[in-house]
Amino acid sequence: MAPDITRRILAARGLRAFGDGYVSLLLPLYLLELGFGAFEVGVIATATLLGSGLLTLLVGLRAYRYHYRSVLLAATVAMVGTGIAFASFTQFWPLLLIAFVGTLNPSSGDVSVFLPLEHAVLSRSVSDRDRTAVFARYSLAGTLLAALGSLAAVLPALVAPWLGGSMKAALQLMFLLYAALGLLAALVYRGLPAALETGMTQPSAPLGKSKKTVYVLASLFSLDAFGGGFVVQSLIALWLYQRFGLSLATAANVFFWTGVLTAVSYLVAVRIARRIGLVNTMVFTHIPSSLCLIAIPFMPELSYVIALLFVRSALSQMDVPTRSSYVMAIVAPEERPAAASVTAVPRSLSASAGPVLAGYLLSVSSFGWPLVAAGAIKIVYDLLLLATFRRVRPPEEQPQEKSQQQPRQLPQRASDGGLLAGGHARSNPER
Image 1 (cartoon, rainbow, N blue to C red):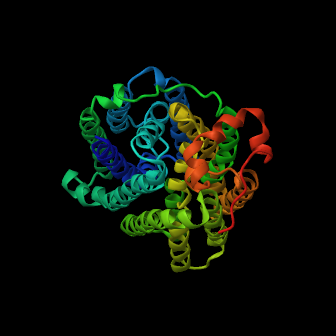
Image 2 (image 1 turned 60 degrees about the horizontal axis):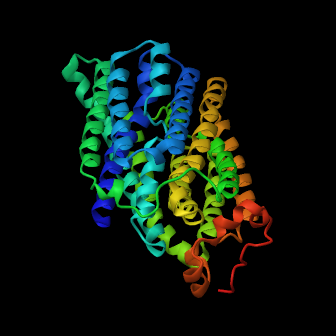
Protein backbone atom coordinates (compact mmCIF):
# COMPACT_ATOMS: atom_id res chain seq x y z
CA MET A 1 0.00 0.00 0.00
CA ALA A 2 2.83 2.43 0.85
CA PRO A 3 4.38 2.24 -2.66
CA ASP A 4 0.99 3.07 -4.20
CA ILE A 5 0.62 6.09 -1.90
CA THR A 6 4.10 7.28 -2.83
CA ARG A 7 3.50 6.86 -6.56
CA ARG A 8 0.26 8.82 -6.43
CA ILE A 9 1.80 11.66 -4.44
CA LEU A 10 4.72 11.83 -6.87
CA ALA A 11 2.37 11.80 -9.87
CA ALA A 12 0.25 14.60 -8.49
CA ARG A 13 3.37 16.59 -7.60
CA GLY A 14 4.58 16.20 -11.16
CA LEU A 15 1.32 17.46 -12.66
CA ARG A 16 1.30 20.52 -10.45
CA ALA A 17 4.99 21.17 -11.11
CA PHE A 18 4.47 21.10 -14.87
CA GLY A 19 1.92 23.90 -14.50
CA ASP A 20 4.16 25.84 -12.13
CA GLY A 21 7.06 25.51 -14.57
CA TYR A 22 5.46 27.45 -17.39
CA VAL A 23 3.33 29.74 -15.22
CA SER A 24 6.41 31.13 -13.46
CA LEU A 25 7.80 32.20 -16.87
CA LEU A 26 4.55 33.31 -18.49
CA LEU A 27 3.13 35.21 -15.52
CA PRO A 28 5.40 38.27 -15.96
CA LEU A 29 4.93 38.18 -19.74
CA TYR A 30 1.15 38.00 -19.35
CA LEU A 31 1.13 40.94 -16.97
CA LEU A 32 3.42 42.95 -19.26
CA GLU A 33 1.10 42.08 -22.15
CA LEU A 34 -1.79 43.53 -20.13
CA GLY A 35 0.15 46.78 -19.74
CA PHE A 36 1.54 46.40 -16.23
CA GLY A 37 5.11 47.23 -15.20
CA ALA A 38 7.82 45.52 -13.16
CA PHE A 39 6.47 46.85 -9.88
CA GLU A 40 2.97 45.46 -10.54
CA VAL A 41 4.51 42.12 -11.46
CA GLY A 42 6.29 42.11 -8.10
CA VAL A 43 3.09 43.00 -6.24
CA ILE A 44 1.13 40.15 -7.80
CA ALA A 45 3.98 37.71 -7.16
CA THR A 46 3.97 38.86 -3.54
CA ALA A 47 0.20 38.29 -3.32
CA THR A 48 0.55 34.71 -4.58
CA LEU A 49 3.15 33.86 -1.93
CA LEU A 50 1.34 35.68 0.88
CA GLY A 51 -1.98 34.03 0.12
CA SER A 52 -0.40 30.58 -0.24
CA GLY A 53 1.35 31.02 3.08
CA LEU A 54 -1.78 31.96 4.99
CA LEU A 55 -3.82 29.16 3.45
CA THR A 56 -1.06 26.64 4.13
CA LEU A 57 -0.93 27.74 7.77
CA LEU A 58 -4.68 27.28 8.15
CA VAL A 59 -4.62 23.87 6.51
CA GLY A 60 -1.58 22.66 8.40
CA LEU A 61 -2.92 23.65 11.80
CA ARG A 62 -6.38 22.19 11.14
CA ALA A 63 -5.64 19.31 8.77
CA TYR A 64 -5.38 16.83 11.64
CA ARG A 65 -9.18 17.16 12.02
CA TYR A 66 -9.87 16.03 8.47
CA HIS A 67 -8.88 13.28 6.05
CA TYR A 68 -5.78 14.08 4.02
CA ARG A 69 -7.48 12.98 0.83
CA SER A 70 -10.40 15.37 1.37
CA VAL A 71 -8.13 18.35 1.98
CA LEU A 72 -5.98 17.53 -1.06
CA LEU A 73 -9.09 17.32 -3.25
CA ALA A 74 -10.29 20.68 -1.93
CA ALA A 75 -6.92 22.18 -2.84
CA THR A 76 -7.26 20.93 -6.42
CA VAL A 77 -10.61 22.73 -6.65
CA ALA A 78 -8.78 25.94 -5.75
CA MET A 79 -6.19 25.18 -8.45
CA VAL A 80 -8.87 24.73 -11.10
CA GLY A 81 -10.61 27.92 -10.05
CA THR A 82 -7.34 29.87 -10.14
CA GLY A 83 -6.56 28.89 -13.71
CA ILE A 84 -10.05 29.73 -14.98
CA ALA A 85 -10.19 33.05 -13.14
CA PHE A 86 -6.75 34.20 -14.27
CA ALA A 87 -7.72 33.52 -17.88
CA SER A 88 -10.96 35.47 -17.46
CA PHE A 89 -9.86 38.77 -15.88
CA THR A 90 -7.45 41.41 -17.15
CA GLN A 91 -7.76 44.25 -14.61
CA PHE A 92 -5.12 44.61 -11.92
CA TRP A 93 -7.26 44.42 -8.77
CA PRO A 94 -9.20 41.26 -9.72
CA LEU A 95 -5.93 39.60 -10.72
CA LEU A 96 -4.38 40.64 -7.41
CA LEU A 97 -7.27 39.10 -5.49
CA ILE A 98 -7.10 35.87 -7.53
CA ALA A 99 -3.35 35.69 -6.94
CA PHE A 100 -3.91 36.05 -3.20
CA VAL A 101 -6.63 33.40 -2.80
CA GLY A 102 -5.43 31.04 -5.55
CA THR A 103 -2.62 28.56 -6.08
CA LEU A 104 -0.38 30.26 -8.66
CA ASN A 105 3.32 29.83 -7.96
CA PRO A 106 5.81 32.43 -9.27
CA SER A 107 8.80 30.39 -8.12
CA SER A 108 10.38 27.21 -9.39
CA GLY A 109 9.80 25.44 -6.05
CA ASP A 110 6.60 24.33 -4.39
CA VAL A 111 5.15 26.90 -1.97
CA SER A 112 1.55 25.77 -2.15
CA VAL A 113 -1.01 24.42 0.28
CA PHE A 114 -0.31 20.93 -1.10
CA LEU A 115 3.19 20.88 0.36
CA PRO A 116 2.65 20.13 4.08
CA LEU A 117 -0.06 17.60 3.32
CA GLU A 118 2.07 15.65 0.85
CA HIS A 119 5.10 15.79 3.14
CA ALA A 120 3.11 14.37 6.03
CA VAL A 121 1.72 11.55 3.89
CA LEU A 122 5.14 10.63 2.49
CA SER A 123 6.84 10.66 5.89
CA ARG A 124 4.26 8.21 7.23
CA SER A 125 4.69 5.78 4.37
CA VAL A 126 8.46 5.14 4.63
CA SER A 127 11.09 4.17 7.19
CA ASP A 128 13.58 6.60 8.71
CA ARG A 129 16.40 5.25 6.56
CA ASP A 130 14.43 5.67 3.33
CA ARG A 131 12.82 9.00 4.19
CA THR A 132 15.47 11.30 2.66
CA ALA A 133 15.57 9.21 -0.54
CA VAL A 134 11.78 9.42 -0.90
CA PHE A 135 11.82 13.17 -0.38
CA ALA A 136 14.56 13.37 -3.00
CA ARG A 137 12.33 11.45 -5.43
CA TYR A 138 9.49 13.82 -4.56
CA SER A 139 11.67 16.85 -5.28
CA LEU A 140 13.09 15.15 -8.38
CA ALA A 141 9.66 14.51 -9.86
CA GLY A 142 8.61 18.09 -9.20
CA THR A 143 11.74 19.65 -10.63
CA LEU A 144 11.90 17.51 -13.77
CA LEU A 145 8.27 18.19 -14.59
CA ALA A 146 8.75 21.88 -13.81
CA ALA A 147 11.67 21.88 -16.26
CA LEU A 148 9.43 20.36 -18.93
CA GLY A 149 6.86 22.98 -18.04
CA SER A 150 9.47 25.66 -18.71
CA LEU A 151 9.79 24.31 -22.25
CA ALA A 152 6.02 24.54 -22.61
CA ALA A 153 6.33 28.30 -22.10
CA VAL A 154 7.08 28.60 -25.83
CA LEU A 155 3.61 27.31 -26.73
CA PRO A 156 1.89 30.74 -26.68
CA ALA A 157 4.28 32.02 -29.37
CA LEU A 158 3.42 28.98 -31.51
CA VAL A 159 -0.31 29.19 -30.90
CA ALA A 160 -0.71 32.97 -31.27
CA PRO A 161 -0.72 32.94 -35.13
CA TRP A 162 -3.67 30.55 -35.02
CA LEU A 163 -5.52 33.03 -32.79
CA GLY A 164 -5.18 35.99 -35.10
CA GLY A 165 -1.81 36.97 -33.67
CA SER A 166 -3.22 37.57 -30.20
CA MET A 167 -0.49 36.78 -27.65
CA LYS A 168 -2.87 37.61 -24.84
CA ALA A 169 -5.37 34.96 -25.94
CA ALA A 170 -2.58 32.41 -26.27
CA LEU A 171 -1.37 33.17 -22.74
CA GLN A 172 -4.91 32.85 -21.40
CA LEU A 173 -5.13 29.38 -22.93
CA MET A 174 -2.11 28.39 -20.85
CA PHE A 175 -3.93 29.35 -17.67
CA LEU A 176 -6.85 27.19 -18.78
CA LEU A 177 -4.35 24.36 -19.23
CA TYR A 178 -3.25 25.02 -15.64
CA ALA A 179 -6.86 24.46 -14.56
CA ALA A 180 -6.97 21.19 -16.52
CA LEU A 181 -3.84 20.02 -14.71
CA GLY A 182 -5.69 20.65 -11.46
CA LEU A 183 -8.45 18.31 -12.60
CA LEU A 184 -5.93 15.59 -13.43
CA ALA A 185 -4.30 15.99 -10.01
CA ALA A 186 -7.72 15.58 -8.41
CA LEU A 187 -8.17 12.26 -10.20
CA VAL A 188 -4.82 11.09 -8.86
CA TYR A 189 -5.62 12.11 -5.29
CA ARG A 190 -9.06 10.51 -5.58
CA GLY A 191 -7.35 7.15 -5.97
CA LEU A 192 -5.49 7.35 -2.67
CA PRO A 193 -6.38 4.30 -0.55
CA ALA A 194 -8.75 4.49 2.38
CA ALA A 195 -5.95 3.35 4.70
CA LEU A 196 -4.44 6.81 4.28
CA GLU A 197 -7.36 8.13 6.27
CA THR A 198 -8.06 5.41 8.80
CA GLY A 199 -5.11 3.03 8.89
CA MET A 200 -2.57 5.09 10.81
CA THR A 201 -1.90 4.01 14.38
CA GLN A 202 -1.15 7.56 15.60
CA PRO A 203 -3.63 10.34 14.85
CA SER A 204 -2.40 13.71 13.68
CA ALA A 205 -2.15 16.43 16.30
CA PRO A 206 -1.17 20.08 16.64
CA LEU A 207 2.35 20.89 17.78
CA GLY A 208 3.15 19.87 21.35
CA LYS A 209 6.51 18.67 22.54
CA SER A 210 8.15 19.58 19.25
CA LYS A 211 6.91 23.16 19.31
CA LYS A 212 10.08 25.01 20.32
CA THR A 213 12.31 23.14 17.89
CA VAL A 214 9.87 23.68 15.02
CA TYR A 215 9.48 27.39 15.76
CA VAL A 216 13.24 27.96 15.74
CA LEU A 217 13.54 26.08 12.45
CA ALA A 218 10.64 28.06 11.03
CA SER A 219 12.31 31.36 11.93
CA LEU A 220 15.53 30.31 10.20
CA PHE A 221 13.72 28.99 7.14
CA SER A 222 11.87 32.31 7.00
CA LEU A 223 15.14 34.19 6.69
CA ASP A 224 16.21 31.93 3.82
CA ALA A 225 12.84 32.37 2.12
CA PHE A 226 12.97 36.15 2.49
CA GLY A 227 16.17 36.11 0.50
CA GLY A 228 14.67 33.65 -1.97
CA GLY A 229 11.72 35.98 -2.54
CA PHE A 230 14.05 38.41 -4.31
CA VAL A 231 14.90 35.79 -6.92
CA VAL A 232 11.72 33.83 -7.62
CA GLN A 233 11.83 32.47 -11.15
CA SER A 234 9.32 35.00 -12.49
CA LEU A 235 11.55 37.88 -11.44
CA ILE A 236 14.78 36.31 -12.65
CA ALA A 237 13.06 35.86 -16.01
CA LEU A 238 11.88 39.49 -15.89
CA TRP A 239 15.43 40.69 -15.16
CA LEU A 240 16.81 38.65 -18.06
CA TYR A 241 14.12 40.08 -20.36
CA GLN A 242 14.97 43.62 -19.26
CA ARG A 243 18.76 43.55 -19.13
CA PHE A 244 19.65 41.21 -21.98
CA GLY A 245 16.49 41.22 -24.12
CA LEU A 246 16.22 37.46 -23.66
CA SER A 247 13.65 35.85 -25.95
CA LEU A 248 10.92 33.61 -24.59
CA ALA A 249 12.34 30.58 -26.41
CA THR A 250 15.82 31.15 -24.98
CA ALA A 251 14.43 31.71 -21.50
CA ALA A 252 12.47 28.46 -21.75
CA ASN A 253 15.62 26.55 -22.69
CA VAL A 254 17.70 28.16 -19.95
CA PHE A 255 15.17 27.34 -17.25
CA PHE A 256 14.69 23.84 -18.61
CA TRP A 257 18.36 23.08 -18.09
CA THR A 258 18.47 24.78 -14.70
CA GLY A 259 15.59 22.51 -13.75
CA VAL A 260 17.40 19.41 -15.00
CA LEU A 261 20.52 20.34 -13.03
CA THR A 262 18.43 20.91 -9.94
CA ALA A 263 16.75 17.53 -10.37
CA VAL A 264 20.09 15.75 -10.62
CA SER A 265 21.27 17.58 -7.50
CA TYR A 266 18.50 15.98 -5.43
CA LEU A 267 19.91 12.52 -6.09
CA VAL A 268 23.40 13.70 -5.25
CA ALA A 269 22.09 15.31 -2.06
CA VAL A 270 20.96 11.93 -0.74
CA ARG A 271 24.46 10.49 -1.07
CA ILE A 272 26.07 13.56 0.46
CA ALA A 273 23.62 13.56 3.37
CA ARG A 274 24.42 9.94 4.18
CA ARG A 275 28.09 10.85 4.42
CA ILE A 276 28.09 14.23 6.20
CA GLY A 277 24.57 14.55 7.62
CA LEU A 278 21.44 16.49 6.70
CA VAL A 279 22.36 19.84 8.28
CA ASN A 280 25.88 19.89 6.81
CA THR A 281 24.45 19.07 3.39
CA MET A 282 21.98 21.94 3.66
CA VAL A 283 24.65 24.45 4.60
CA PHE A 284 27.75 23.52 2.62
CA THR A 285 25.96 23.18 -0.72
CA HIS A 286 23.94 26.34 -0.18
CA ILE A 287 26.73 28.84 0.49
CA PRO A 288 28.50 28.40 -2.90
CA SER A 289 25.18 28.81 -4.71
CA SER A 290 24.56 32.09 -2.86
CA LEU A 291 27.98 33.35 -3.89
CA CYS A 292 26.96 32.66 -7.51
CA LEU A 293 23.86 34.79 -7.02
CA ILE A 294 25.94 37.70 -5.76
CA ALA A 295 28.30 37.43 -8.73
CA ILE A 296 25.66 37.25 -11.48
CA PRO A 297 24.82 41.00 -11.75
CA PHE A 298 28.51 41.82 -12.22
CA MET A 299 28.82 39.62 -15.31
CA PRO A 300 29.19 41.64 -18.53
CA GLU A 301 27.76 39.03 -20.90
CA LEU A 302 24.72 36.79 -20.98
CA SER A 303 26.84 33.65 -21.43
CA TYR A 304 28.55 34.22 -18.07
CA VAL A 305 25.20 34.84 -16.42
CA ILE A 306 23.78 31.60 -17.78
CA ALA A 307 26.87 29.67 -16.66
CA LEU A 308 26.51 30.98 -13.10
CA LEU A 309 22.78 30.21 -13.14
CA PHE A 310 23.64 26.63 -14.09
CA VAL A 311 26.20 26.31 -11.29
CA ARG A 312 23.74 27.77 -8.81
CA SER A 313 21.00 25.37 -9.96
CA ALA A 314 23.30 22.39 -9.43
CA LEU A 315 23.83 23.43 -5.80
CA SER A 316 21.08 25.65 -4.44
CA GLN A 317 18.29 23.10 -4.10
CA MET A 318 20.20 20.27 -2.44
CA ASP A 319 18.76 21.54 0.82
CA VAL A 320 15.17 20.93 -0.33
CA PRO A 321 14.86 17.14 0.21
CA THR A 322 17.29 17.26 3.13
CA ARG A 323 15.38 20.07 4.82
CA SER A 324 12.05 18.31 4.40
CA SER A 325 13.50 15.04 5.68
CA TYR A 326 15.15 16.76 8.64
CA VAL A 327 11.94 18.44 9.80
CA MET A 328 9.98 15.20 9.56
CA ALA A 329 12.75 13.33 11.41
CA ILE A 330 13.11 15.45 14.53
CA VAL A 331 9.43 15.80 15.40
CA ALA A 332 6.97 13.25 16.73
CA PRO A 333 5.10 11.38 13.94
CA GLU A 334 1.67 12.64 14.99
CA GLU A 335 2.91 16.25 14.82
CA ARG A 336 4.36 16.02 11.31
CA PRO A 337 1.46 17.68 9.42
CA ALA A 338 1.55 20.67 11.76
CA ALA A 339 5.37 20.79 11.68
CA ALA A 340 5.42 20.70 7.88
CA SER A 341 2.94 23.56 7.78
CA VAL A 342 4.55 25.68 10.49
CA THR A 343 7.95 25.43 8.77
CA ALA A 344 6.55 25.90 5.25
CA VAL A 345 4.18 28.79 5.96
CA PRO A 346 6.69 31.28 7.33
CA ARG A 347 8.76 30.56 4.25
CA SER A 348 5.87 31.62 2.04
CA LEU A 349 5.03 34.63 4.17
CA SER A 350 8.64 35.79 4.35
CA ALA A 351 9.20 35.13 0.66
CA SER A 352 6.14 37.24 -0.14
CA ALA A 353 7.96 40.40 0.91
CA GLY A 354 10.77 39.80 -1.58
CA PRO A 355 9.03 40.07 -4.97
CA VAL A 356 7.52 43.50 -4.37
CA LEU A 357 10.89 44.82 -3.18
CA ALA A 358 12.65 43.16 -6.11
CA GLY A 359 10.06 44.53 -8.51
CA TYR A 360 10.69 48.02 -7.19
CA LEU A 361 14.47 47.62 -7.49
CA LEU A 362 14.12 46.35 -11.07
CA SER A 363 11.85 49.28 -11.92
CA VAL A 364 14.57 51.78 -10.96
CA SER A 365 17.70 49.87 -12.03
CA SER A 366 18.52 46.95 -14.31
CA PHE A 367 21.75 46.13 -12.44
CA GLY A 368 20.37 43.15 -10.53
CA TRP A 369 20.40 44.34 -6.92
CA PRO A 370 17.75 41.73 -5.97
CA LEU A 371 20.26 38.95 -6.73
CA VAL A 372 22.94 40.53 -4.54
CA ALA A 373 20.50 40.97 -1.67
CA ALA A 374 19.26 37.39 -1.99
CA GLY A 375 22.75 35.90 -1.92
CA ALA A 376 23.83 37.88 1.14
CA ILE A 377 20.70 37.02 3.13
CA LYS A 378 20.96 33.34 2.30
CA ILE A 379 24.57 33.15 3.50
CA VAL A 380 23.54 34.62 6.85
CA TYR A 381 20.81 31.97 7.08
CA ASP A 382 23.25 29.15 6.35
CA LEU A 383 25.64 30.23 9.10
CA LEU A 384 22.85 30.58 11.66
CA LEU A 385 21.40 27.16 10.78
CA LEU A 386 24.79 25.51 11.18
CA ALA A 387 25.43 27.19 14.52
CA THR A 388 22.00 26.29 15.92
CA PHE A 389 21.31 22.76 14.66
CA ARG A 390 24.63 21.12 13.86
CA ARG A 391 24.32 18.90 16.96
CA VAL A 392 20.60 18.09 16.60
CA ARG A 393 20.58 14.78 14.82
CA PRO A 394 17.80 12.78 13.13
CA PRO A 395 17.37 9.11 14.17
CA GLU A 396 19.30 7.67 11.24
CA GLU A 397 22.40 9.73 12.17
CA GLN A 398 22.40 8.64 15.81
CA PRO A 399 24.33 5.62 17.09
CA GLN A 400 22.27 2.64 15.94
CA GLU A 401 21.61 1.09 19.34
CA LYS A 402 20.33 4.38 20.76
CA SER A 403 18.32 5.14 17.66
CA GLN A 404 16.51 1.81 17.97
CA GLN A 405 15.76 2.29 21.65
CA GLN A 406 14.73 5.94 21.56
CA PRO A 407 13.99 6.92 17.99
CA ARG A 408 12.09 10.10 18.87
CA GLN A 409 13.96 11.60 21.84
CA LEU A 410 14.92 14.92 20.30
CA PRO A 411 11.39 16.30 19.92
CA GLN A 412 10.57 15.23 23.49
CA ARG A 413 13.40 17.34 24.83
CA ALA A 414 12.63 20.37 22.72
CA SER A 415 10.26 21.80 25.33
CA ASP A 416 12.84 22.16 28.11
CA GLY A 417 15.05 24.54 26.13
CA GLY A 418 18.17 22.40 26.57
CA LEU A 419 18.00 21.04 23.04
CA LEU A 420 18.54 24.34 21.30
CA ALA A 421 21.13 25.43 23.81
CA GLY A 422 23.15 22.32 23.08
CA GLY A 423 23.02 20.95 26.61
CA HIS A 424 21.07 17.79 25.79
CA ALA A 425 21.80 17.33 22.11
CA ARG A 426 24.04 14.53 20.96
CA SER A 427 27.42 15.41 19.55
CA ASN A 428 28.45 14.22 16.12
CA PRO A 429 30.49 11.00 16.34
CA GLU A 430 33.84 10.80 14.61
CA ARG A 431 33.41 9.68 11.01
